[in-house]
Amino acid sequence: MRVLALAGRRLAASLPTLVLILVGLFLLLQLAPGDTVDALMAQMGGGDAALAEDLRRFYGLDLSIAARLGQYLLRLVTLDLGFSAIYGKPVATVILERLPATLLLMAAALSFAFFFGLVLGVLAARRVNRWPDTLISTLGLIFYATPSFWFGLMAIVLFSVHLQWFPAGGFYEIGEGLTGLALTLDIARHLVLPTLTLGLIFLAIYLRIMRASMLEVLSLDFVRTARAKGLTETRIVTRHVLRNAMLPMITLIGLQAGTMLGGSVVVETVFALPGLGRLAYESVVQRDLNTLLGIVFVSALLVIAINFLVDLLYAKLDPRIVSGG
Image 1 (cartoon, helix red, strand yellow):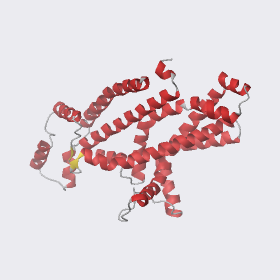
Image 2: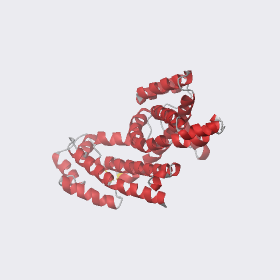
Image 3: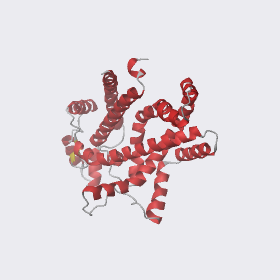
Image 4: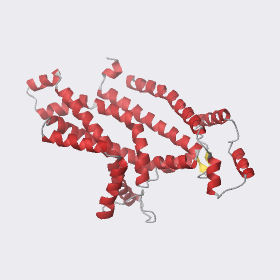
């Protein structure tokens, strides 16, 4: 119950932040030139001023900024994200169509980065100042310093064009009519390269954090006591050191959830994935304010949910968080 109470307080504290983000973005977008009607008129090949005025009145764009903001916040209370003039359907429907691709990409990239960052970080700490540590640290530096879009393009050239192991883009093979296990395997095959592209930068961060945390925990008194009792090094690491050394990595998951969502914009664009990142880019270009605000709202909810789970896991690994010690 204490863990849930702690997580509940963190969750309640994040709601004002969500409102401030939405209000700030709404006001910021009003400063940008053009609006949704301009984008619609461009798609239609032009039109007269009377048509543009009628469209602005139809979509409520003739109201003041304060009135539009008030209407949007009132709709948001009932989880009504509005209507997308560009896509011709409710914003919630548009987002739900794109959400699975982003969730799968984030989950796969995060799992890949966390697992291999953990393994490589432990290996580097166990072989500190030796060639494995030097090699792993150098690779981590290269992964972190290289732009994700370059990784994606090179992965397409190597694995899609030359080797033809994986598809160059898309979420699944359109027109194949795949279902069940065949569809699942096809989606997994399409997500391999995007997962590697998005996950390599985060893998570099995790392995550096894990290496530093392992070295710090290995120097503590309880580890020396365990060694004095005759425990093997492997048992010390797996039973005593890992639980404490993983705490910074767990914290980093919550902090970087938003960063990973931002990184998905580039990756989804490179690999033509129909996800929230690509949808956000299209909404900015087309000045689809309702869709963009809906994406920010859903993305913020995702970040809040991930941090909620991180708080629960953190309190499980370190009971002092709950007791206040």
